[in-house]
Length: 146
Image 1 (cartoon, rainbow, N blue to C red):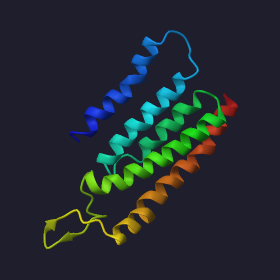
Image 2 (cartoon, one colour; image 1 turned 45 degrees about the vertical axis):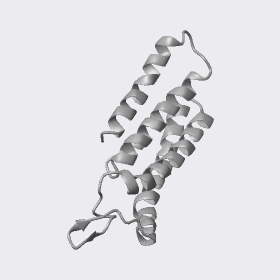
Image 3 (cartoon, rainbow, N blue to C red; image 1 turned 60 degrees about the horizontal axis):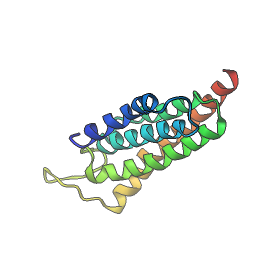
Image 4 (cartoon, rainbow, N blue to C red; image 1 turned 60 degrees about the vertical axis):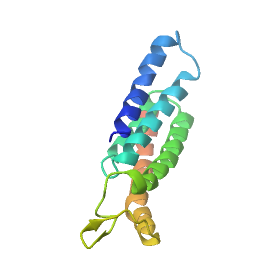
């Protein structure tokens, strides 16, 4: 958390400063906002391994504001890629998750084996990806109806 909070909070605040610094609507501003949001989520998700699944929906909701299916699809793809990196990096540096990492003789060690990676893929990664993909049609419908 000593790493996640100092990096994610400025990343979440950076779009507000960018809007103030960049006068008018620039074509690249939405990409900067989304990049900051996804990078902030990646930082939090890496350190808080089992608390951020619903927070990954935020970039998709923000992308609906721009009324572009293409932009939302790219946001979904970016979220999946960075969520993948965060989940597997979280095994090495994130919060201790006793469901995923073995406790041997009362000693908590971070020994990442192939079985832990497979279990993480099946029970952490796939459900989260399916959640994001299942939420995407809702975002597309919001864009069509707004």
